[in-house]
Image (cartoon, rainbow, N blue to C red; front, side, top):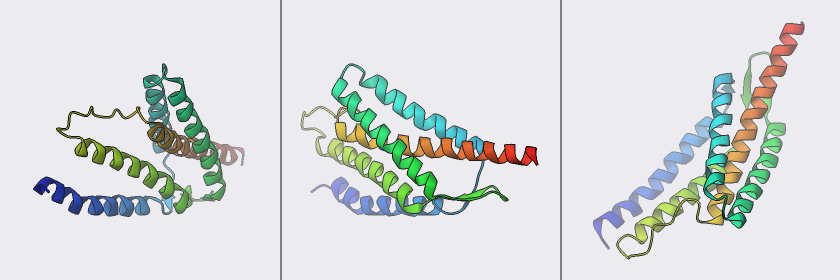
Length: 168
């Protein structure tokens, strides 16, 4: 076993723990900032569109991306129903478990791809592309669908809040 392998084995749990801690801090009560919601919607929509453009000629993979996105949208709608909104202060508290499950699932898939690339290093096996696996596309669609829908729901909530304030 090389020193690089040992270093990766030691650092991987630390990386997972840091990602988990960062996510946990993000899944608490937070102020709604509309520009962040628009940015989130744009980024996650772009993730789906870029991945979709990569697999347009491979219909089974495009189907898996669509299934993941549809499931993510449904999961996002459920997440919005479980969110606690504070209309008087523009704060919201997301359901921490839902968001963390989705984000950790995607993070695990990215980590797996990294390990696969590292393990195949120098073996002559071609490096796997990010959109070559249906599992990756399913995880990507699920993640982007969930967080994109969540961002869109927060934008909708803020618009309704602004409309109510202007009507009063």
